[in-house]
Length: 284
Image (cartoon, rainbow, N blue to C red; front, side):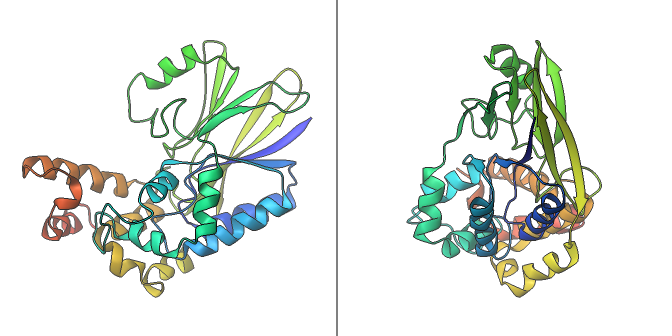
């Protein structure tokens, strides 16, 4: 029998990662599957990286690259012009704090692939969906069904949506551990992950949600200086963390729509004054 932890979407929340590592220290596992999105959207990303490197030394880890890592790798020289702003200020903050070692590590990770553990059925791992790092089964109607029908494996492990779920269709099973660092559960202040138990015939998944030190983490946003760089979108992030409602995504969608209305080529071109209107609109 195998006992494996499954995590995804840390988004730089090192406090949630600390709570997870403390949990598995008391509930031992043989390894950890990580589905990507390790940093961005948070203060002190170097603390998350230190914990990840330590985790890899202590446990056998199978790690993927997510879309947030792709953003950083695709903009290593900041050719996209990230700057202090609601649109991409927190990405800029993170990029400034990543070392060459960190970026090389992200570049070494695959975006998807199979995992075969002795004595257990094969797993297929991805961040979003197979072939689409940003494939979101929660937001795109019919995507999960399409993916699962075409899947050549009995189990698909995916993240990105930040929604915990286990779904069975076409004789196959989809498992999403939710988001360790940015849970979208309507509750807030919780870190989500899963524990997989495997035998020769099947894998069983237990979806877990544990508390972590949210209050000190929120203080980090101010103390680290990231709030000054991320502006309104950081307010949305913090409200998301305490409510479990994705005000971050709501804000992005609102500003993408506003960019279209204003005839702008992209969201980063929307003036900061438009972002400020979200403070009242979403109670940020």
